[in-house]
Each structure stands twice: as structure tokens, then as C-alpha cells.
Amino acid sequence: QVQLEESGGGLVQAGDSLKLDCTITGRTFHTLSMGWFRKAPGKEREFVAGISVFRDTTSYADSVKGRFTVSRDNAKKTAFLQMNALKPEDTGLYYCATRSSIMSSNLATEYANWGQGTQVTVSS
Image (cartoon, rainbow, N blue to C red; front, side, top):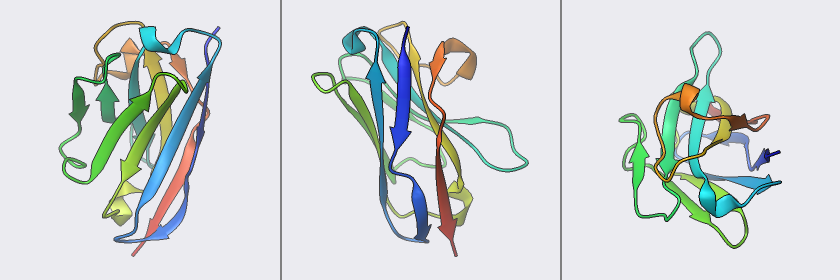
């Protein structure tokens, strides 16, 4: 059974940076592609970023391109989301998720395992 735990969220001001971590236990990490999603109050969950198993392919939502960077360390079984130039509209509960495929997807339904989320709040 795969277990995921996010960390690194917090309260920051617009323009600040945060780095989220997602640590996985229970299954070989290097067989799973990773996705980051977020849910803001009153909005549906949305895709933020994804990374393939071998780190050679990444994808981003248009709203975060150029500001967020997704990465992973297969040896440490950890995925990362570096968030720069944060905006108030980036506020939300951020989740990491795993997909049993080499490539990530922007569809939440493609991911089988999810963490509990870490809150990111950006003040203006």
C-alpha cells in the first residue's frame, strides 16, 4: 500500500517562495509518476504539475508555468514542488498523488493514491 505525506506548506506573502515535499512509503517510488494538485475554497481540485518516472518529462498548469518547478529524487522517494513568485490565487490545499505509469497525467482520476494535503496561504 502506498502512503504519501506532504509537507512544506505555510502562510506567506505575495511574491514569496515555498517548497513542498511529498514523501512516499510502501512501494517502489521509481515505478510511479507523480502529480501535484490543489484545491481552493469554493473551487474544484485542479492539476498543478506532474513529473514522469525518469524525470525527463514535466508538465504544468498554465497558471503556474514559469513560477513552479516539479522535481523528484527517486533515491529518497520524495517529490518536490518549488513555488516562486506566489500569488494570492495560489492559495489552497496542495496534494501529491501517484500514478502507476511512466508518464504523469493532468487528470486526477488517473491517480490512485493521495496524500492528506498541505495548506498554502498567500496573502496580498
